[in-house]
Image 1 (cartoon, helix red, strand yellow):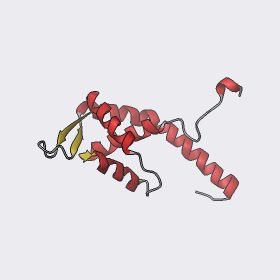
Image 2 (cartoon, rainbow, N blue to C red):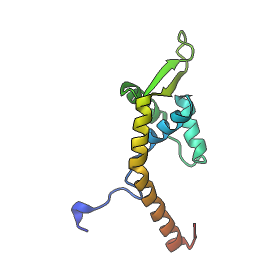
Image 3 (cartoon, helix red, strand yellow):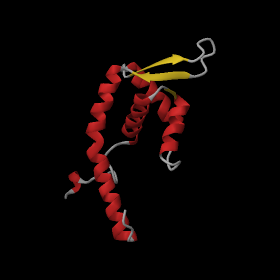
Image 4 (tube, rainbow, N blue to C red):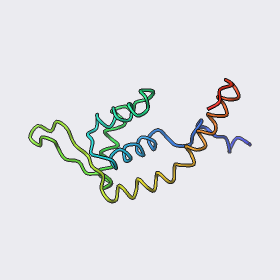
Length: 125
């Protein structure tokens, strides 16, 4: 492999932003959430090992809403405290497309991690 072909991300080729977008749409495909609850739910499902920042979640929610993939409404419109989001039909189609598109990246990552654990740490997973 020469310089132009180097892999610069390890162990996956999915960006953090793409991963969070996939996870947000996945969760919204199951039920409605507000921003902080989405962040906390991702963290909970990942065993507290990683949490997306509010600075990633809220701009993403705004973009997804502008793209028509989700819709939001204020829980208390006069106070504007919590904006509750739900996925649209277009959002479901987009979610399925990016879900399929990223499957091989997750498979590759899992393969690499299993090999490293076995080779370096003599741990079978």
